[in-house]
Length: 182
Image 1: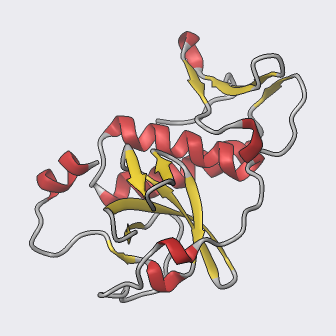
Image 2: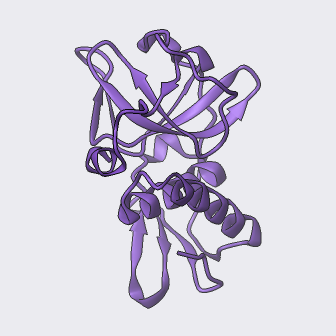
Image 3: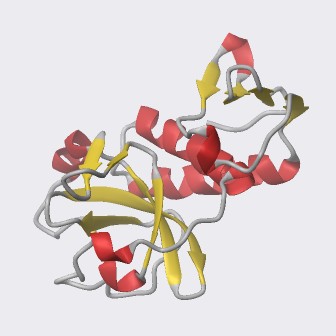
């Protein structure tokens, strides 16, 4: 999948809904509440070269992992582009997650698949950005319970310390097994 000059950002202030118009009448609606995004006004603007590069580099990293379905890769890359351009800065929330039993054997990088464990669930995530001593991760599971009263939904982004990141897959899992998880 490649971003094209036909892709457009559209924001409807009445509906408080940001979307990306793709080619052939396809529309991707941002899964984020308006409170998670910077303040937006009515907009109908073309995708910039920077937007296209953000989308493409993230999509290519996910595709290279050979671990996710094409649909999940597309949605994750679109949502990553939305969050990088319009996401509101957030504070770290590492306390929701257990320290990794098996730490990563290398520094995290954008597009890396990792796992986060809240004690209630252990789910697959993608590294979206690295900011100093913190990493922002996008949730791939449909629902990720953090506590009795707080959960994250698929494609939500959360900032954590790198010592919370666990390797996404053990060497014993096959590619087909991991595709079913995503």
